[in-house]
Image 1 (cartoon, rainbow, N blue to C red):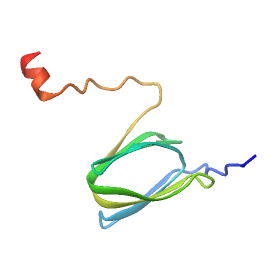
Image 2 (image 1 turned 180 degrees about the horizontal axis):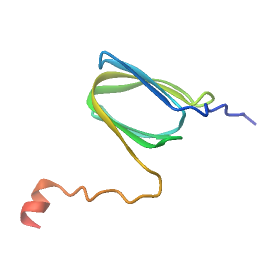
Image 3 (image 1 turned 120 degrees about the vertical axis):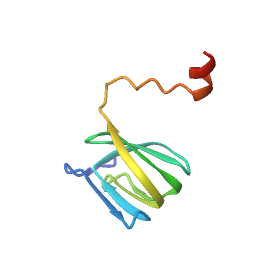
Length: 94
């Protein structure tokens, strides 16, 4: 059985908004070119940007390398309900 050595520390390093490394990652929940969602020891981390790509994933070490243009990131604590993210059309006509 594989042993995971996920760091007890959670660290985000972003270089010139073009690439970065995140440690303390438990799992990659989802990703596309505009959003990467990670389950970290600090909570659910959402990274938003353009042309985003998961360059490297080390499940054993709990690290993820990303590249693309990072516009921002934020956390959602695990177990808390997601904010109501209705579409603009639904808000206008719903």
